[in-house]
Amino acid sequence: DDKASVDVIAAEACPRYLGRIVKGVNVKAETPLWMVEKLRRSGIRSIDPVVDITNYVLLELGQPMHAFDLNRIDGGIRVRLAEEGEKLTLLDGQEVELTADTLVIADHAKPLAMAGVMGGEHSGVNGETQDLLLEAAFFNPIAIAGRARNYGLHTDSSHRFERGVDYNLASTAMERATQLVIDICGGQAGPVTNVTAEDKLPEAATITLRRKRIEQVLSLTMADNEVTDILVRLGMDTEASTEGWTVTAPSYRFDMSIEADLIEELARIYGYNRLPVRTPAAATPLAKAPESRMAIRDLRRQMIARGYQEAITYSFVEPELQKALDPEREALPLLNPISADMGVMRTTLLTGLVSAASYNLKRQQPRVRLFETGLRFVPEADGLKQIPTLAMLVCGNRLTQGWSEQEAPVDFFDLKGDVEALLARGGNAAAYRFESAQHPALHPGQTARVLKNGEPIGWIGALHPATQKKVGVKQPLFVAELDLEAIRGIAVPEYGDISKFPEMRRDLALVVEQSVQVDQVFDGIRSVAGDYLTKLNLFDVYVGKGIDPDRKSLALGLTWQHPSRTLTDEEVNNSVEAVLAHLSESIGATLRG
Image (tube, rainbow, N blue to C red; front, side, top):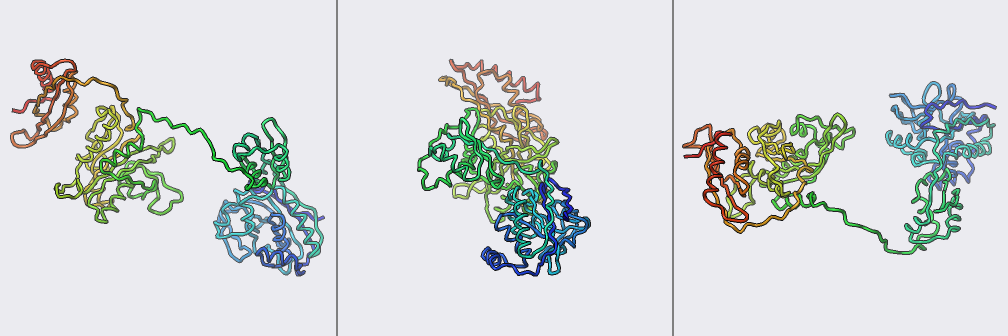
């Protein structure tokens, strides 16, 4: 009548625990030859009759079990999570230091076994054991998964529990093990203590199976009675419905959860070789390609056409390099990085491109032109923001080596020209501006903020010499980073008449303050030059002899053209006078003498 005392504290991890006391057993009895041979053929060595019985039940029914020496248990069984740093010597003699997420079978004083993995040496059955406590339980696979590997272990028990065990099997296994113990070792068995948290046990899956779906997946129309027969023979409870069947899987079929699982079983039992071979047919409409949005592939082609090569770098980057290139942002650290060089998520794509450029330059590549499209990961107060971005990098020679061209290094304006060409690809180049700015990782005299309709969308500039030193590159690197979504907008083409009348051009040499930006001059000209100004370009900048050191000379070309008649000199001269008057008043510009 002795009953095991069981207290399940971690019911979420162990919804069902069965224990039974068996007294007066003879552990020195000989294991029957048929059992020894069965175990041997299954690759398991015979140890003693009690251990052999638990191993045999595992093979026979699929339920892992364990037997404790009852006299080595203090107070009763407690199923709980281990305390951090608690130690346990396992049956193989290995002492492990348990972590707080490890489920253990313990008594009132100490841990006895690592639940679902391996028993402890102290409470294990030995040659002096007379009384047993048999254990059969259902452990949540999530609570067992990975625990054995964390301690460098791999056992049959952990292998089963990780992949799933029938949650209704423990009672049958307990009775079968008890019978074998009494038959082989003798003794008397007490009642079973069953501690079950019904609300924590898995629920039998109820799945809707449709006739049309069977035909669609298997290209076969199966008779209703054949489908029902196969499912019933597999142990499923089936109930017919208008569209097919409602199927409840038995507890031992924990691999059944969705309709496709049932269809796979039908195909398996029906016979794969009997299934017809048909070419699948499906409606595959073309994805919409909005005319007002540039495809990523077109952007890549544009970059390749300008001599760039696409790079694909890791999103995980080296923390120090990340800090050097984006010192104002705190990158998101990884909990389990692949290596020390991949410890944080990139907040800028330049981290990967600079590393790639450094790698190529160290291998005597004289000319590097790289670009990358991808996500950068910026931590914000409301979470991690993932921003699609385009990054560009140039260094080395401007052109490939050849007899017709002199070697010259790239500069800021080479990269700026490539960026402008890319922005002009959308047909709305006037929406973009380059504004002198400061960036902690870029050269203070060669840095610009890229604006679209007044809103910042990126940066362009040369790496700061101090940053170059940190990343281990000696020659200048010129980089750009742009918001990808902002530059993908395309102005929808509109028809415009082509004038057959001649153009009229005037060249102006204006002297302005050094601080005046060309965009200011352009904006001033366009505001007063009239509707027929068709072209405006800067073709020379002069600073030196004959010019005040605080001023510079800008040579501009202005072109007018009327769509339906020839413009007169007087009209053009009036426009030029209006331009000069406005620029003189707004920015203090004068004509160069």
